[in-house]
Amino acid sequence: MCCNITSQYIKRPKSARLIAALICVCFVVALVLSSAFIAIHENHEHDNDGADGGCAVCAHIAAAENLLKTVSAAAALSAVALGTMLAALIVLKSVRSGIADNTLISLKVRLNN
Image (tube, rainbow, N blue to C red; front, side, top):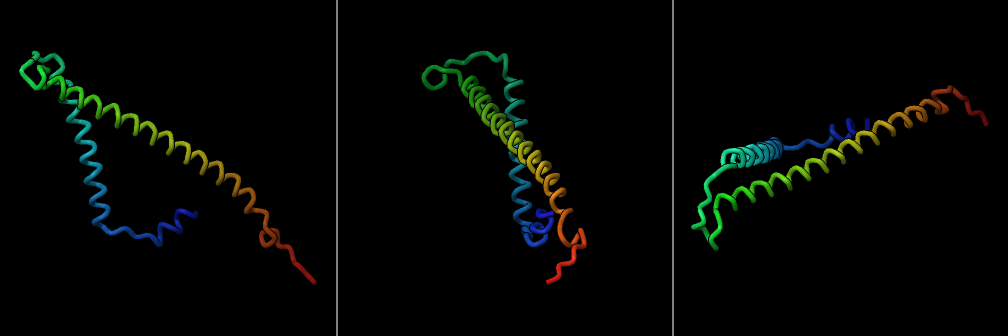
């Protein structure tokens, strides 16, 4: 109920929603393209002519794997935080509903001097 009340008063401009949607799309595209690059170049021939005699493709694969590791850890942490928050809200709502039912007005108590 508290979320419904605050969401009525907070109006986000459409440009902010568009920017958030574009950031989400870029995030997903980066994950998909990193996974595709790793899958395509998994068994490549090593070219040791790169900087410091290292393979450029191996360096890019390592960077893509690092991106995927970082993002997957952040996504897992976000999922755990969201699940914990939802569980807390469910528990608090059930506790609050039991308390809110026992008010003087709901029990129709008349207070005389």
